[in-house]
Length: 212
Image (cartoon, rainbow, N blue to C red; front, top):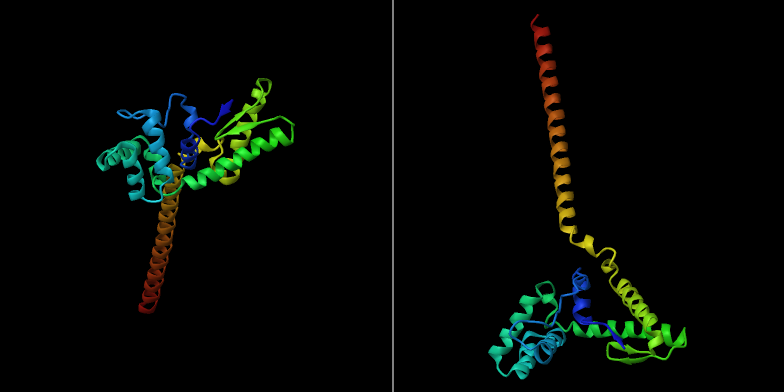
């Protein structure tokens, strides 16, 4: 049996331009002071599925017992995940579930239909005979990358490292445009000044000629 570890946090981070799989020690559900499985994982899922802040607090209150505790837990999760906090209590979970289903359909189709291998899906995991485990792993990786590439082309793993450079590239482009515009401005001023000097000399020449 193989599964997509931390699939929803992973999807959200990819949508934010970050690949958390590069850090094998990173665990989205581990937060100091809270139990990972009975509290943090459930609270994280509440945050991404709740459509509003108040509905998220209400659901998390049922989880920890008090409104103050729910707010503290929410803040701790946001502090843990500042890069994806914009997706919390926004109903984003519905889109993530749709992506889940699309990836699962790809894996099932590739193995069951195209290769005749029996696959048993369980949530975000798949069960096959031990002899097919390596092929299942390859198909799951392939399906994840293809589906994410089709829905979020910019988030292909190949380009993820370069996304962080975009602000600096834009700043560099702005500076280049500024330098070019300044040079153009000086050129225009030089031409106007030269024209003015030339006209002044021409008028002086005409004046001297008439005096003589």
